[in-house]
Image 1 (cartoon, rainbow, N blue to C red):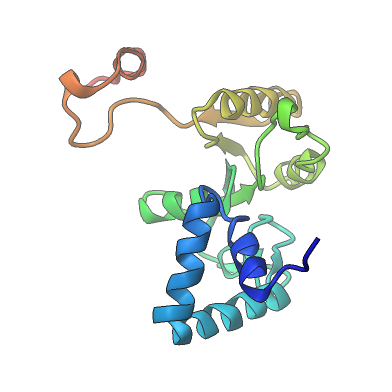
Image 2: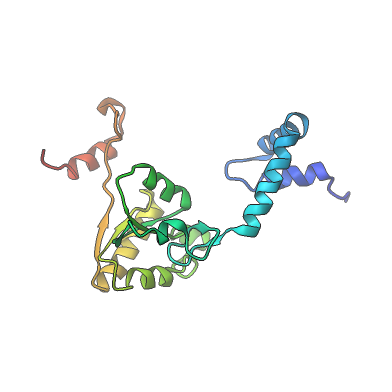
Length: 198
């Protein structure tokens, strides 16, 4: 068997990205080498720097360059509220709303028994210690509305309530600007269940 060439290694490396199959990885590799050599160099440097400098914040578990990230260290954030999300991308989306000023805990995944991910792999004990610090009064579960996200929220809700914490779940419903005729019945049903008075 012939040794892999540098091009083969690059294509194989690109396949680790979510949603990137063999053809997409090949297109990306050729594009970087043919048209974006400067971009490829920059990508290489940025990835190396990120791998060397980033770690998990000891409070929220998201990525940070220091032991405690800037968000967790910010004195103006409401330390009584702790929002639990699955990924740093979910955390960023919550921040973009500009409606939440509490703190976060990032699970870095969700409970997925078929993928071999359970509470131990997610280090749920770290979340429980964080939520039980005596300052947090309410934990908002903002896991995704997938089967795994729902199971994770249910599991965490039971554990957190047993420790005397107030637990809430983000609401589901229709997105802003959506038209009823294009929404699925499950989404409309959930919007009806979670309706609020005007």
